[in-house]
Amino acid sequence: MPTKSPHKTRDDLLILVDAEDQVVGHEAKERCHDGAGLLHRAFSVFLWNGRHELLLQQRSDEKRLWPGFWSNSVCSHPRKGEAIEAAAERRVREELGIHASLRFVYKFTYHATYKDVGSEREVCSVFVGQSDAPVRAEPREVKAWRYASASTLSYEIATRPDWFTPWFKMEWERLSRDFSAEIARKPV
Image (cartoon, rainbow, N blue to C red):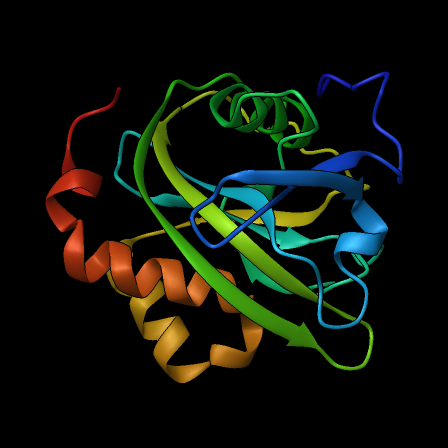
């Protein structure tokens, strides 16, 4: 079973940052996503299997922002006082029930608004990793999951962009364009 975090609440304090990713404070998760959002630290994880297929997750219908949309393997936030690498590995365990070593690839800043519900305004670190462990998804986080080849994924994003979260589309474009050698590397 996925590892549950006994300390996770809807009011987890996230790390507020400035444009240079320097810590400027902390705020409750809900508040960080209200309205236009507050700039905060986040991460996205891309996990590949041994056949070099990417693990995608469909976000739970319980998610406030982009419920039911397809996205990268895991995306979340470090908590106050938590290193981003540790947070990424923690969320892989909590959401997917697997362990994976991760490698940092790049960082970017983005803002995306979901209807009139709220926004993501994040400095997001992107990690890649590899695992062939069986997925045991946490249903409150993950509605469904699947693997896709790079070519299938690129085709789906081009023909059905409304299926995918905005940050995932941005990340996939940049990974495919600027880091194809990095994502083609053998596992960590």
